[in-house]
Image (cartoon, rainbow, N blue to C red):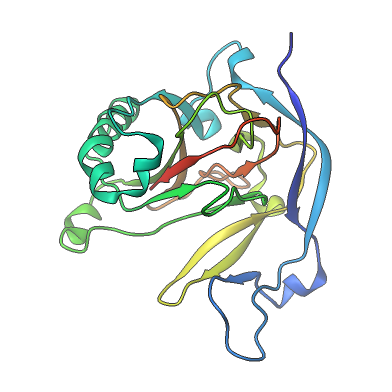
Length: 255
């Protein structure tokens, strides 16, 4: 029995103003006269999202931009993931070991954790790529001599996930020049450049049916000196969507 789902996503709308104006979104109250966002979004319905559990072979970072890995959540209860000290002590070492094994990495460094739930930072409804360009300032010079990559980890704090699971877009189906638009995400102290996405019928979206708290999405955000082939991109867009409204989803992002 197929577990593919038909979903509705929000995408950036094509507009002539993008020729001279860059999409932006301000995450604080902007100065008078400045709109909080200039985004024009369109809802696209009947998008097929396939279950990775039904694929002949699991997705990979290299081919698809994402993979599903096992991470032992340890002794933390779901409500304790708001406690940064407990997360750093009990969960991040487990996550680091799992990610290091999955990537064959020389070193893992975490920058931030964010919990999303109905009570706090609800699931995003817009397809996007978020990129965090940070290096440890004490080691930036030495680290910059190596290849380094930014990844996101997405893990549910409760399961099975049947309410707003995370959907990921296969990077092999993205045309960088046609499908992506740079966007400034503006905070009070920093501006992050991210991507908005135009809808494309060639895109292939995937999710993990009934994802559990020991299953984590690992998906790429950027690579140092990133120079993929023309039209391609080394980052996996994400989007949350309503699958079955019978389970309140709570999750954490780790960068």
